[in-house]
Image (spheres, rainbow, N blue to C red):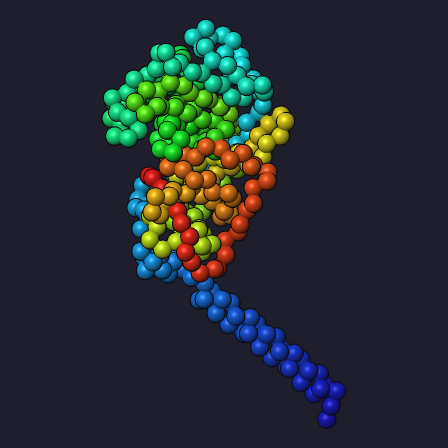
Length: 308
C-alpha cells in the first residue's frame, strides 16, 4: 500500500474541506450583515413612527438628467458689465465679486409686506425687474424663494436647469416692513464648463435617510422635498469646481435648517445653515467644511425645518 499517496489524498481532501468551510462562514457573515442593514422601507417606517412628515418625491427623476461636475473659470464679468451699463448705480466690492445697489428714494413698491405676505403680482414684478437691464445677467437667474429671517427675495443662477444655491451666484432683493424693495446684492459664478463623465447620483430619499441615520432629523420634524443644486466644492485662484448636492430643508417648531448632502457619495456637508428659504446664503467653507459620512446610528432628538 502506498501510504505517501494516501497521505497526499487526505491532505488535499482536508485542504478542500477547509476552503469550503471558510467560504461558507464568510458567506453567512455577508448574509447576516446584509440582512441587518436597515432598508429604505425600514428607515421610512422608523421615521413615520417618530411622527416625521416626509415629502412627496413624485416628479424627481434624476435618472433622466445628465449631471456633470462643473468648472467655472475666474473672470471679471461683473466689473466689465458694470462699466458698460450706465443704468447701474451701485458699486462693486474690492475684488469685484459682489455688486451692491441701493435705491431707497425710488424703491420697488409691492402690494404685500413681510408680515402679511406677498401676492403673485409681487413675485411677477420682481421677476420682471431681475430680467431687466437694471440687473446684470438677470436672465440666467431663477426665483428660489423668500427668506423670512433675512427679509429678502432670493434668485439663483441656473446651470443646466440646476440652481447654484450656495450663495456664490445669487441675487438678494431686500424688502422693508412696508413692502418696499430698497436694495439688492448680486454674486455671479459665470459660464460653466462640463467636466468628465456624467455622475451617478443617490436618490433624494437616500439623502433624507442619511440625515435621519446621522441624527439630523428629530421626532416631529417636517422634511421638505430635496432640491438638486450645485455647490462650490473647490475654489482656486483661477477656477472653481462645482458638484451636485441635495439641499434638504427640515423644520421643527419655529426653526428651519438647511442641510446639504453630497449627491454622489452621500456625505453630509457641514455646517447646516438656519434659514426660512429653500435656497440658503453661502456659508463659504468650501475647503474647510466638516464632512460627515453616513452612519448606522439610531435617530435621537434634534431640531430642524423647510419649504418646497
